[in-house]
Image 1: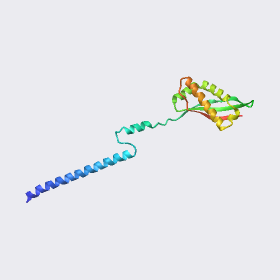
Image 2: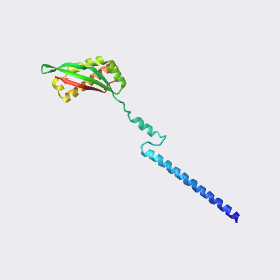
Image 3: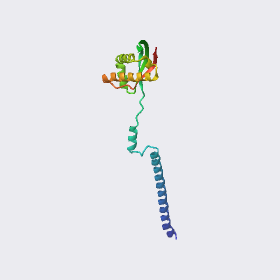
Image 4: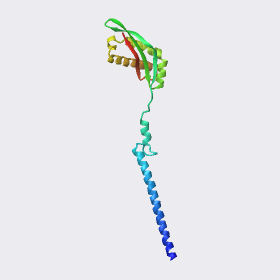
Length: 167
């Protein structure tokens, strides 16, 4: 009877081993699919896929702004109904392109001169209003960028008033 039991025990062991292997493979497959699904739903795409690389390149990188202060104030006279008034403006230039900042520093005497001319062409009553001051900012930005363009340099992003006085 010992011979009859031996052949019957071997197939039972093989069946259990196959069942254990199938269970382990099933668990590993479930874990792998779970990880891949989690990565996919969190927006990362599947590892090795090109979709993730494309979306990363579409997002613009944050570039901090840099500033150039025109140290001395722009001082000039402005006209109002035949009388003269004074305007004093402290100005800074803002740009995200480091080349524009360097260009503004290099051409600062020319930029300053043209900004004084722009300011002196302003109307005193107009400068008393927020819209008038915003118009002056826009005109000054156009003046600065036109000057930089004539010199073959990149544009600045903004002209900022640090202090603004008209009297």
